[in-house]
Length: 415
Image (cartoon, rainbow, N blue to C red):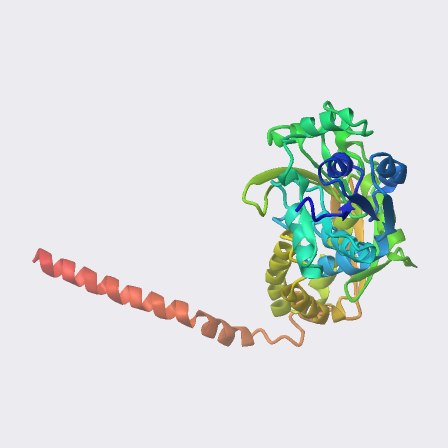
C-alpha cells in the first residue's frame, strides 16, 4: 500500500501519538501529509498547533470549530437518550469520535486524499470508533493505523521517537497521563492509573476541585429544558456553548462530576479511567429528574432499556448506523413533554433536587397526598391486588396440595 499512497489526511490533536505520526508517515510512506484538528473544546491545547504540525512535516493543518455541532448533534441526542456506559461513564470521548471522523472524511474528499490516518492504539476503543465512521462515510478510502504497523510499543518509546525527531511535547516520562479533553469532559488514563489500587492525586484533575476543597456554601442552579434539550440557566436563555461552559465552571467549583471507573473495553480487556464531567453531570441529573416528572411509567421504564443499548452503540463506535437513527426517532417522541425547570443544589460533590416544575407534569397532588378524600377510590385496590396476585395464589395452592399429599404418603408409609 505504501507505493499507492500519495496524500493522507491525519486526525491530529497535537498529543503524543499524533505528534509523532506526521514525521513517521513522511519517513515511511513518503507521502504528502495534511492534518485536521477539530475544536471541540480543548481550550488552550489548540494554541500553537498549526506551527507544530507544519514544523513536524505537515503540508497543511485545518482547524475546524466543531463545538456547536458537537453539543447539538452528538451530546444532546446522547443526553436525551439517557445513555450512560456501565453506570458512570457519560461517553465524552466516545461521542466525539464520530464527529471528528466525519469532518476528517469531508476534508479528505475535498483534498483528494488517498487514505485516512488516526493515532489510536491497537488496544483501545477509539480505533474502532474512527474506522467504523470511515467505513460508513468513505469506504473507498484506505486506512492507516500506525500503532498497528510501527515498532513503537509504549508511550516511553513514543517519547523517545519524538525526542529523536525534535517533536515538541508537553508530556514527559514522569507525567505520562493520557488525556482527552473536550467541552463535555476530561478523561485521564495511563501511567499510575493503570494500577486500580492507586488513588488519583489532586494535581491530576483539571476541571474540578476536590469536594473537600469546594466552597462551604451551597450553589443553587435552575436548569431550563425544552423537549429534553437544555436551554437556560437561572431563567437566562443561553446558546449551547455558553450554557455548557458555564455549567462546567459551576460544577467544577463545587466538586461535581468526578468518576473513577474500571470499564470493559470493546476489544475485550478491562481498563481504568478517571473522568471529570462537571457540566455534563449537572445536565444528566436535571434531565433525568424532569423525565421522572413528565414520562409515564411504561415509557420511562422502556426508555431505561433503550438507554443501555444507546450507550453501547456510542461506546462501540456505531454512531452512523440505522439502529442509532431509529433509537433517536423513539427518543424524539418521548421528549415532546420533557419541558420545564429543575433546580439543583450543588454542594461538595453532591447534587440534590430542590425543585421540579413542568406544565406537562404527571404528578397529581390530589392523587399522591395521604388525604383519603381524593378521586382515588381505595376500594378499587382490592380487585387490582386480587388479579395481580392470582398467579402467585394458584402456585401457592398447588404447593400446599403437593405438601399435603406428601405428608399423607409419609404417614401411610410409616404405618
